[in-house]
Length: 398
DNA sequence: AAATGTCCCTCGTGCGAGGG
DNA sequence: CCCTCGCACGAGGGACATTT
Image (tube, rainbow, N blue to C red; front, side):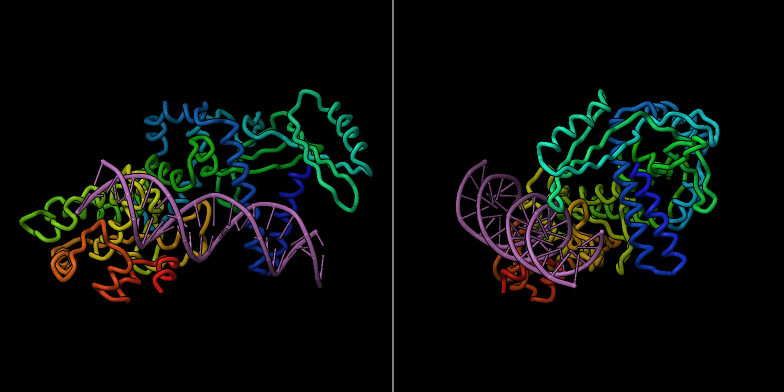
């Protein structure tokens, strides 16, 4: 059972790294552990599907669960929230009617057996695989093959019966865990352990931020740094509604009056993604790609792009310098992070001035025709670089 | 004037080859 | 067995000509 061995191996390595105070090795082991948990979360999500009995139990009994578990607390950071969430006995949330440490059948993680076979010729390999597969008739088998050292290697992954699971409270990690493996005395083992946030992702088919958000709402945990952001966005929204009018800021209204719904969508997006906000020098920021924003607005990204950049120029949106260091599939691009300041008359006065320059100072530039080169022409390189952070844009312009 | 379609450029990632 | 390099690919921001 090499899945168990590989987990054990990672845990051993981590223990060793901690003992030796090797930060790099600890990080590496943690990363490996996280990625196996993540892979298992995805596997379990697929096995259970979007509608499952755990989700059903939660949805049907939400009021009762809330009454039972609510803690009504205001705290400062998301880390504190996670600490509190880990203390929740999730048996009540997902209707797991079992005692602590009592084994029961796990319905979403199968035991898995890996068998590696080496042969001298391809024919022998094929025959050997056939023979081996006979032993596991009726079970799902995935075969992969490759050549190594002149040998033909066949690898079989046989999915087995349901595994055992049990609930435990881990004193060193300070949280309830859903353990998967076997408690048999002669050969106990652990395939994987899930905490409440992993389970929430599996059962509710969501990601970690939504899981935290959902559990905070359930438990009545209010995170100050997020609630402040929510409040600011709400105030900005009503400031726009009450002040961005033809009579109060005529030129600004002429420039972006038509775009107000897009600005509102960005606020709604920010509120929806409240728990995805991250810390930056400017304050709490969130990310939304051009494509994503365009989709939620039912437009093309090339329509949205100049509008977002106009908002940035006007100071209604700031593009902070975020260096997350991660960029790629499923990650947020560093240049699509936004900080939204508290709107007031001063900001709008400034925006009115800028709108004046765009529309009536030299060549008339409308919101949808705003671009990097136009920005340089009207406002200079420095301001343009603050708004247009894409390297391609700059490479092309030079 | 706004929206769209198409294209361009770069970066991160995955994968296989080759070296230690 | 692990690290590094090169290469192809897809995602993403943005420009620009064309359509609505």
